Length: 116
Image 1 (spheres, rainbow, N blue to C red):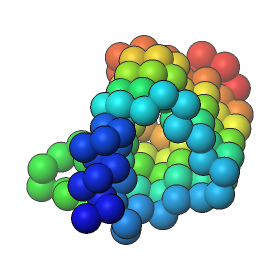
Image 2 (spheres, rainbow, N blue to C red):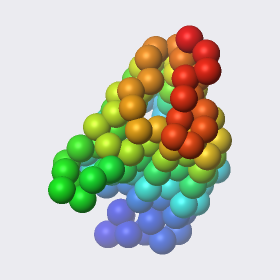
Image 3 (cartoon, helix red, strand yellow):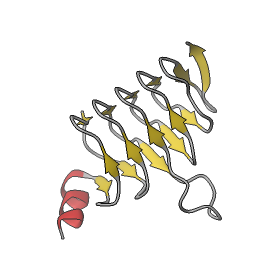
Image 4 (cartoon, one colour):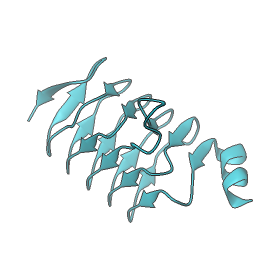
């Protein structure tokens, strides 16, 4: 019941099976979809319209893993079995399909590393 209330009131799909770290900040609610098997580290920031989901229908359990202190811009999509390193930044509207190393910044469609 709580899942449905949060989804309908705040526009955030966050299932109880998601591994959620401490002090995760959702800056602007609305349009946020997080895979049931996703892992989100401590001190991450997630903005509106972010999707952490699966990439292939044949692999429904593959979900993103975020390290600590990851900053995700609005409208970004992180899809599939992707690992985002600690202190990484994901730009607004980026589509991340591959791993992002710690401390890097990824932008674009598909996302490319612009800073390490």
